[in-house]
Length: 382
Image (cartoon, rainbow, N blue to C red; front, side, top):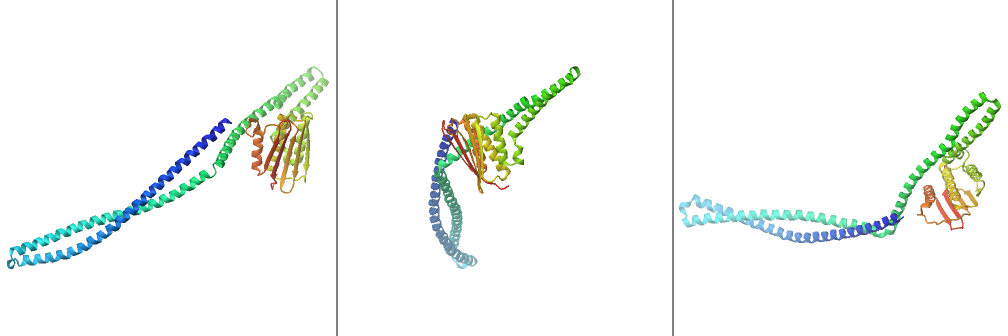
């Protein structure tokens, strides 16, 4: 599990870096927002002054336009009757008209420049206003993210640690499936398959004995062959029972459990002694609940047989209107309840199965004081 601890530590470091980065980003966005606000106010002030100048230039242009019209009219009159005007008067009229026209052109250029600058500043204000709104919105979002990240880091760590544990459990499930396939393959090869091969050989032998010796010896061999076939049939049924007991579908949970526990006790020559108690009305429930409860009993009893070295195992199941309560107790050697130990894979699988049913499981065990497994699951409708 050192790998998991290292991963959790690395997660804490990553979260710290993320929080630091997000915090710095928030400060940077805030600074940008303040800078944009300051620029906005400066441009707004400049724009107000610029609008006043535009009005002044327009008014000045109107005056110049009026003066230029009079000057052009005066120049036209002087030009038309130049013989009655002196040369200085003609020259003065021309220079005034030219001067006013020049001032008018300069005024128009100035107005054009001021208007262009005004339009540019107005566009800039609109852009800055949008930037400020987006920056404020972004600061708000970053604040929400920071509050989320800093509010309950311990819970995040627990969630990730649980995810790591589930990932580990998933790999173990795959390994267990492969091991179970290997076990079934070996059992079928060494049991029924080998026995059927022997049946073929013995059947050929019986035929020779009948021809070469006597019918009585052939009948004796047939009786032995019948025992061999019966043993092979027993092995096939046992393997099928381990995979999925057909009695569970036909008879229900309680009879199947009683038969299963009796078979286990007989198979182990009564060591340990297994007692089974059923409380409440024996009624059929949802198929997946019956299968789950059967597998939970199977797993708990198997753990007791493999690891507890117990002299007695007690199995009790109680049904009421709302839930089923399952107790499996042994008087064996007990174990360390650290859920992350390698040999707790069976318990992890039981917890996963109970979680899928929306129930609860508690395990109480102490070294040399036995083990008690209590499971509560809600009753499921068919």
